[in-house]
Image (cartoon, rainbow, N blue to C red; front, top):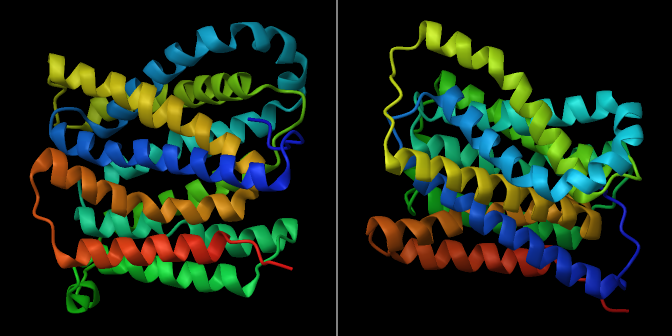
Length: 307
């Protein structure tokens, strides 16, 4: 996805970037609900493979025309696209699926949702991105809201968390997503958005093939084929993969990686809402308090100072 965007006015770009990022996170959040429904039915690497297979199949018709035009630029920067695909497509989501088998959902959600904290200092170091005080204050509010939601208002539960190998994989996943966000910012010019997604999805899918065979040789978890399983995999391929990545990459072009990363904190909020609607989980005071802090942090951290 080409990161540089010169069309709309600054204020219009801010609004578009915010809406696109929220749309991406809203659909990404549904991935956790789908993951629960498929627990124990699909091995993690195979789940990642089929997710990106359907994402690649969906984006290819959209990118057919632009790919032919953009192919010379893609070949010239093939190392960039291979690295971006490996980190953002092959490794990031696969690590989350593997970690979910060995770590509590609370641990995985908390660690991965903190990936924006890695984007901020990295963007400052690599791109000299500004870090105004209001952004740091907004991040503090958002982070406190996330912690409040994930520990359900019980700070002692957070302090008593035990870390496992799955938690370490979640940390690596958070690093990968932060790196992907920064890489998108420096995407080579001359490649259209659909071409970007097609080449990264295709390369990421290709990188997963040997690991699917390796998983089948060592795993004891069988693949249970059913209509529900295939429907879920089609959804995560078209929704959290194609739609969300397209929105996320476009938003980075409008408002940059730092502001875009802040919205990633809203994922626990949306996941909680979906859990109430689709899983019947109760609504607690902490959902309102955590949600209010997240929204307040968004407003403080992304607001523009009036002159």
